[in-house]
Length: 386
Ligand SMILES: Cc1cc2nc3c(=O)[nH]c(=O)nc-3n(C[C@H](O)[C@H](O)[C@H](O)COP(=O)(O)O)c2cc1C
Image (cartoon, rainbow, N blue to C red; front, side):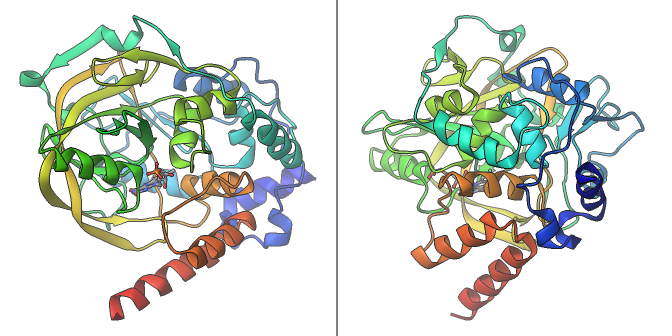
C-alpha cells in the first residue's frame, strides 16, 4: 500500500500530491536488493538497475529539449542510450529523484525509512573520511590537450525551452582553491557553453567560488578551476551543501558515503578519479559574461549578467563517458529532492538574508516545493521593483 501511494505520487508529480500523503517518513518503497556500493556513477547506475529503479531509454532522443522533457516528465532515474548525433555516448539524469534513490546512493539498503536515513546520516557527519590519493584512473584513458578541445563533443543538453543555450554544468563539481589560504572549495555553479572551449560559471556573490575569483583578481591572476562531470553522487551532495566547519567537501562526501573519495592530482587541483569527465581550465580575471536565461529552481527564466568566464585547457574522460546532468525548474525536481534532504541535516546555505534562509529551510523540510517556487518568484519580483 505504501509503495502504491509513493508510485501514484511519482506519476502525478509530487507537486500535485497532498503533502500529508507525501510525508517521506513513510517507509521507502522496497526496491529489491542493491548489492553494489554506489561509490562511482557507474556503480550507482548498477545499484539503481538491480533495484528495479532505472529506466533505460532506448529510443532516439534529441539533446535539444528532448532529454529535458523526458527528465521532467518521469520521476525516476533515466539512462539515455540513443542520443541524436552522439553515437556511443549516454546521458544520465534523475539519479536522486526521490528519498529512496538518495538512500541507495549513500549505500543504504532497500526499505530504509526516512527517519533512519536522516538519523544515520547525521551520525555519519560526525565522522569525516579523508580522500584517498590515487595515481591512475580510468579518466586517463582519454586526455585531450588544449589545441584539440571541443566541449560540443559531449551530448550537452539544452534542458528547457526557456534556456538561452546548452548547459554543460547542472549536476557537476567546480573545484578551486583559495589563492590566499589554499583552502579547497567544491561547489555546484551552473555552466552554459559559450564556445568549444568556453563556458560561464554562474556563482552567487556570497559563494566561496566568487571569493576565490575575487582574491585571484586582486593578485591580477587567473583562477585555476577543474570541472568534474559524472562524479560520485555523494560528492555532488557535498558540493551543493553548506560544508560544516572543519571539513571540506571531499571529507564531507567521504562521511556521507562512509568511504573515502578517490582523488587524482592534476597539478593545481585534485579531482575525483572516478569521474566520467574532468575539464581543467581557469577563470579569466576581470571578465564578466552573460549567463542565461536559465530555467532555475524557482521555475523562472533567470539571467546572470555577472557570470565568470571559464576556459578549458585540458579534458580527460573515461571511454564512452556517461554525461550526468539534471533538468530543474519543476516542483520536486532532483535539485529540490537534494535540498529537502540537506535541509534535514542543516546543510543548506544559499547566501541570502536570514529571513530567506529560514523560509527556505522551513519549506524544504516540509517538501513544499510548489510553495517554495511561489515564494521565490514573489521575492524576485519584489527585488526587481526595487
Ligand atoms: C544542482 C545544483 C545547482 C546549483 N546551482 C548553483 C548556481 O548556479 N549558482 C550558485 O551560486 N549556487 C548553486 N548551487 C548552490 C551551491 O552549490 C551551494 O550553495 C553550495 O553550498 C555553495 O557552496 P559555497 O558556499 O562553498 O560557495 C547549486 C546547487 C545544486 C545542488
